[in-house]
Image (cartoon, rainbow, N blue to C red; front, top):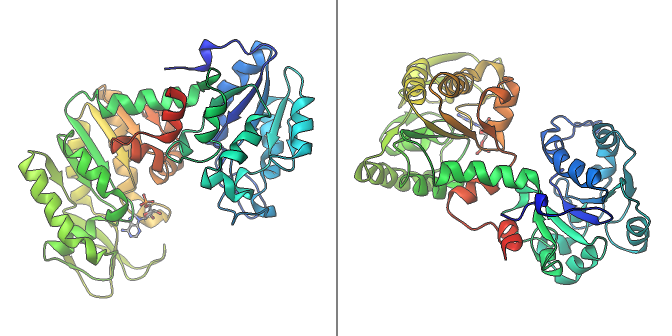
Length: 397
Ligand code: AMP
């Protein structure tokens, strides 16, 4: 793997694609800076070599033009504090000002470019736009695992302009190493824990996991479509009616492949979608009309925890319930604790998929007690589905 360790950056200008797409609150404070912290080792190595750094990222989903709320200027102060230097800022990621600021950058200095997605060319993977960006530096580094599944101008197309000067940053290398450990080197028993809102989002992953895992645990909102497909009553719980047949197919496939597929035995239900809802536990498939399932119940927690604690490899993607609400976080918290117990006491390797499971692990302060928490949501899912990520392919090419 071509990592930045193979390059001495002295007097080089490294153009680094990072994933600084961090969540901001209404006052533009960063509510989770994990993705920024994760990119610091790469930046520091280049600066220590005697190079300078030009950072490019996207933030949020602008509609193809500048929008103040998505400006990367909001993260400039935090980034400067993290790096303990004054990071410079280019209000436009291309154009004369960016070119001048990049040209005048001295070794040890860092320049952050404005949100790449203020240009629709970024997501379109426009070659001219990628070429303009490429002119700002003389080495290209991709450290944005979170966007590695996108063939965008800055994540993939730009690499063409650096045929001999393109590298993976440390975060990318670490993410790929850990994903690979689970994808092709899993020690058995291998258990995947899938949760979250929708079956449709995770279906490809579930299918590809059936060829690899010993146990597949399914919880979260997606479990209700399975329950309904099996003839249960699910009240007003999340349902993807058009996926019911698929759920039955998956159950059959799991059986045929000898995979133990565990669905919740019971569920914690609520009379409304709110933390102060009235709640009670019922068996799966016995939810009264007008009630909704918002978490797995105690019997499921016991069953799932037992399977998890006996595993040697764990992949967890998606919460078991609406963990954002304190009254419906028990299932997700218990599963997190079981994953920690397997890691600490059974020497298991535990990979936590990005997005909401990462947020849950962070909420419970357990990030340091599992093997690895990925910064990628969609990217990790696609990698696990066996797809070649464009951001990875572009560096390897
Ligand atoms: P995903 O992005 O697909 O991983 O879904 C994560 C979201 O699913 C979280 O915001 C959870 O609150 C939500 N979720 C999990 N379980 C349920 C449920 N039973 N009903 C509604 N939403 C759920």
